[in-house]
Amino acid sequence: MMTAITDNDKERIRQWGREGDGDITLRYATTGHSMDDRFQSFLDQVGDLVPRVRTKKDGDAMVSLPTLFIGSHVGYQALPLDRELEPFLAVLGDDSAFADRIAPDVRQRLAQLRAPALVKIYTTPHCPFCPTAVSILLGLAGCSDRVRVTVIDGELFPDAAQKDRVTAAPTVILDDQFRWTGSVDAGELVTLMLDRDPVGLGAEALRSMIEAGDAEGVARMMAERGKIFPSFVDLLVHPRWSVRLGAMVSFETLAGLAPGLAVGVVEPLMALFADADDMVKGDLIHVMGESGNKAALPFLSTVAAGDYDEEVRSAALEAIEKLN
Image (tube, rainbow, N blue to C red; front, top):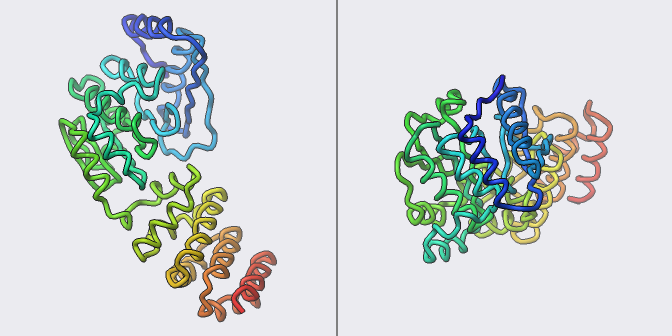
């Protein structure tokens, strides 16, 4: 399925390409979605119009919809045409293109942000207010790499819009919890980002911290709040090894910072153990061994003597040794 880029948009893309120099990498991901071909067509046409734009497929991206990635914290699950083309091209050329639209006092407060803020904005192709709202969010992302923005075309992906209960554009959603429809106030949004209780952060937000190399930051947030975040446990059973590894590193840091808190991980992990595959089982056992919680010993002894994969039983024996 071809994406129809109008002659006017083609000329705007060519002109943008002539105004800059140096190669630009535009990463993308396809997901087996029916819209994949339209995204591929858009990429091919942009590459033909501006040869210095190099497209690169990201096979490891954890997305459910075809996505265009700009830098490390902006994603377009949308085809940026017509009204949406200008902000897309601006930030593609310079990821801080809209940072100067954020007031100095808001930028100053944004610098205090510790936990990632995952922001989705639903747009439609002919929405007159959407480009301004998108530009504000891109400005926040340009000011802080803690702000992750995903632009979603609600008409192109109606199932996603329905799932998020979106009925109008623009609609902004923070951490899948807080939402605005209509105009966006950067100051109000940053205030909410700072006032959020990190206990309620979703697994995706914590994963983004870990993948950005801040596993220690996740551990410190839990230690300061005196609670193992429910979504953190989800990372310990994540199907991707690299995510589990990062979560295990974070947990080991937590065990050093707050050993009395770390012991509490055993009960939820035992509850998840039966449904986990063997690779995950071994990692869960490792975490139990690092927890310092001797209450895990009877469970680990049962696993070590049970009908499990040899590596799982071996991990149980190592955990028992660690706890004794």
